[in-house]
Each structure stands twice: as structure tokens, then as C-alpha cells.
Length: 240
Image 1 (cartoon, rainbow, N blue to C red):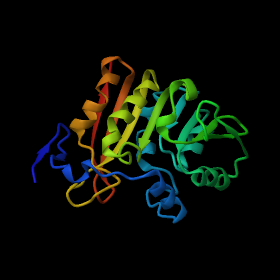
Image 2 (image 1 turned 120 degrees about the vertical axis):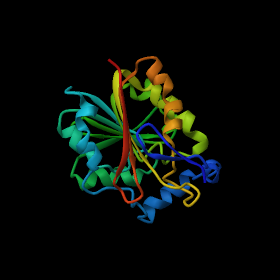
Image 3 (image 1 turned 90 degrees about the horizontal axis):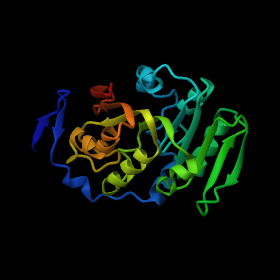
Image 4 (image 1 turned 90 degrees about the vertical axis):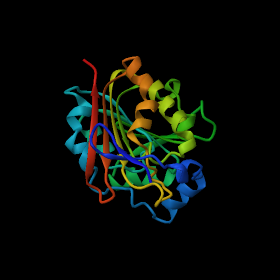
């Protein structure tokens, strides 16, 4: 298999053909939650968010922070408790209800007029808003734009054929000078069909080039985990 080292010194795998046509359906994701096949969920929050929180926040307060494919991530409550407004999207209503129940947070439900069949679950405090729908049904006219993005388990979960669509959506949701923290996984894609899918750094650069061209993402930090869960590499791009 062909491999090359990127600028961060991490080996990139060029043979991703085994995953290119892989499609995971919405029903399969719902089944993962129903069957409790959710090894991707971290009960204590994600250590990389703790480590690089200063990059996400940049010393700012009262940010709007987006959690794509949020599941029931405990980090959402942590950031809300810090005074930020958190917005997430998740196809599993079960996951969202578990989030509120596990944190003893009262919430309300309401339909989303712009998205047939979608629901918004919002904490009574108003600083956590979680949308139950396909992420591709969202737009800035529905959820607004964001100062920060925590993309852990999102880009690596979307089907490879949808990556450009996903990245394009993220870019439309970026406020000027936003911060984007992305976590990917490094492994041999010929030995695992995904998800999580392997996304090489070169493809990440291509997917989000527009955010850099138009100065939307002031800080874009790409973090790569190795198979054992340790940090394999990082690449930070910062506009001055």
C-alpha cells in the first residue's frame, strides 16, 4: 500500500478505495443507538477538547458553538455551563433525550417549520438547542452562524461521497474569524471499512480551502488520533 508523510510527519494512506463507495444509512445509525452500539460516546468528555479548548474559545465569551452529529456529547453541557450557546444536530432523538435526562436538564420540544418532521429540543435555560434531523437539512437561515465548531466524530462519520457536501455546509455556517477543531483517525483504510472513515490531511485541506480563502476560519486545528486512541499528529492553520 502506498503511504507518504504529511507536513506533520504522520503517514498518509493513499489507497482509500475500499471505503470510497461505503454508505451507512440513517437507519443504521438509529440502530446503533437502539442497540447501544455507541463506543464512540465518551462518558467523561473528550480529552482533546480539554487540551485545545483555548484554540476553540480564543479567550472569547458568549460564543455560539456548533456540535455536528452531536449524539449526547457531555461536552455540550460543559460549554453551556461556561456561558456559551451550544447548538447540535443529531438524527437520533433517543440520543438527544438521553442527553437531557442524564444531565437532569429540563427542556422543551418544538417543530422546526423550515424542516418537515424535524424537532428542536431546547433547554429551558435557552443555551442548549439540539436539532433532531438530517444535518443536510440545516442551513444558516435555520440555525444561524457559529463562532466555534467541535467536529469530533462528524467528518469521519459522514459517507465519503458526502464529504464535500458536508464541508460546504460547515463553511456556510461559519462566522467571520471562527474557530474549527476537527478530530480524525489515522489507520490503514484497507483493513477497516469504517466508520469512522479515514480522511487524509490532503483531503481535509481541499475540503475546507474555501474557509481559508475567505478568511472565515481564523483558527483551523486538525487533530489526528492513532488506532490506540493517542494523538498521532496535529496541524494548525492560523490567519494573522
